[in-house]
Image: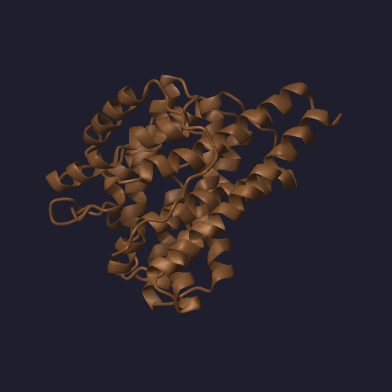
Length: 338
């Protein structure tokens, strides 16, 4: 019988004081936009507790921003669930068409109001985007859309693996997992929650980029451990535990233990790099004291995501539910796009 290895990290558990309000809000939001139709889908996504995830990952966000981020996480998780089901039903060309159409929902300079659409996923995403653009600069929007586009490109790679039964090698998987895991857009939202914006030259600094890669590894490898049994049942080869198992010829339990060891090593790398980054930005005459303060907040936000994801994932319904997320009573709205 498979048992979860120790995935603990040395970061403080934190929780947003508005978590219950955000949870109640997002449940109503998904119903208001008509995204959840079947009782099983409502049951599954209610049990997923997106408000708790966002409350742990963004413990610093005021209530209005917390609700926006929670709406995003819930709608985008549903989008991602539906996207995983597209490749078997549509051609590769139509999958690429879906990516292009999705990006069009994120205009850099949106006009007033949200365009009408018969697709509730599109309507909700455009609504959330309009609320985010009201709180962000053009610089932030460009970066977010760039990260989102890269995420969708990673999803395309993942879909081709699933469709063709291609099992990726470890180095390729680690690199590409950072893309289709979506952590770059998630960290962009930390700036919204914090009320800060990093300048492009700060965000692009090698130290920040390395920390973002480490954060993605720590969050997404842990997710792979939590979800490996469900993904193995579904025939999904895009999971680091299964990659290790195949490469080593080991059992699933042994592979998960090895991934846990890799996580400990990556966490040590993160701690060392974060200490170095805080010291560098704080002492360098190249950056202002305000920039150094914002970088410190941003790094703390990474720690909240790493720890919060593990706390939320432990026993969460999302990785264990047998209830249908789509079906006759719960359509895959992305199929309407293509």
